[in-house]
Image (cartoon, rainbow, N blue to C red; front, side):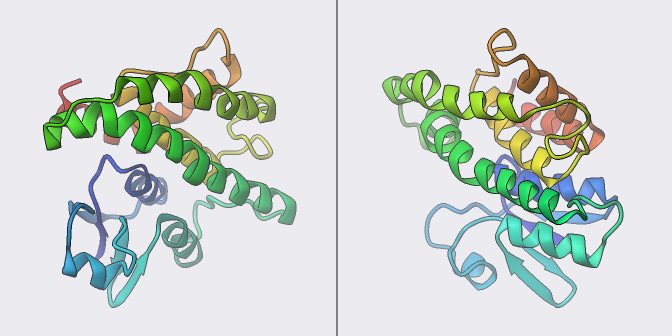
Length: 214
């Protein structure tokens, strides 16, 4: 049995869960939190980050590593392109989302607007949020808008890990009360909406909205 260790609202946990759903693989979620000392999590993920995955006697940390492992072990349906250049592009967009997008949306918007008030009873830093929304998100979204050429995916017009990675931090942005301005970035807004409408995403988004009362 496959087990995903990590809190559902994490964009990295969500990325793995969507990949599992797309491959129609059954799994259980162990909702471990990454905050504070957690020796059990450290055994699974030496850096203390989520998610980690166990698959029988196999244990792996890091969402990108996990998704690559799932692709090799459970290759159908493919979430990575077979063409070498398209494969590299998919990895690039996965990294772009996991690093730049999550860095802006996670600690500077979602943590401030949702996690701190709800779980730590700490006030939101509204200045930090507004600065991220006004200054950091526009160039990130502008680049993605320039790369979308139609079809079901940002790489070669086919749905892939790139689209999963790009769409997953946007869920956190929406939980925080923000979104993609369709008038400013119409292709990106439409693309993310299509990805979020997939069964693999839709069920998780509904599950999380229930937690946050949204």
